[in-house]
Image (cartoon, rainbow, N blue to C red; front, side, top):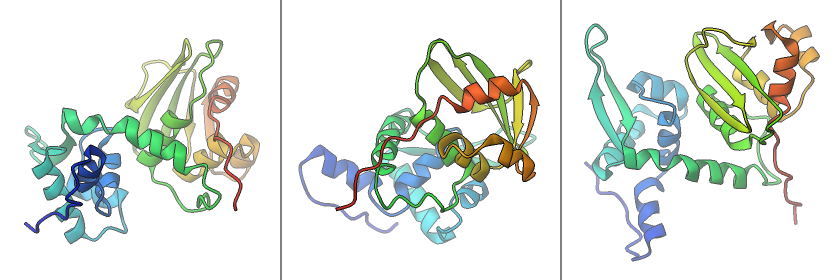
Length: 219
């Protein structure tokens, strides 16, 4: 394995960057925040990373104790990568970095976002409101998530509710523009990019609970 580059600096922040500061490393972590993935799934989430570079980053992260490999039991019997308990502690750091980065005047809002990236963005941009309650299912093709807002808290993970207030069937880009960019729901529906099954009001209350921070002014 190629030797990881190091700042050779005694600062703990410098050492952290030795571990996750290489190109694609922290995005590999992002792709594993919501659960284990096969190599092919990681390639789908990081299409611009070459297979060789992705393999190298996974080896480095595994060597550093951030990621581990695990073989699923039959009938799947496939190998997956997942965050270690220590690696999972990077999620709030990713969220803080996201809140900081989204305020940039050069933030590329028109660039496509992946499904897992969007889910993490929703976690990051949630604005608590104890008066809001909503159990919403988000369907992105075969990738389904259950989202619950209750008592000022927000939880979202892969899976489905036995009973939900509503189900939103869409794609990551459309949901990004509606929930974070506040594009009109009616426009997304009229364009055939979003379908809502169930309580439309619950969906509206759900979308209202996400807010981008104000961007800084360009120099």
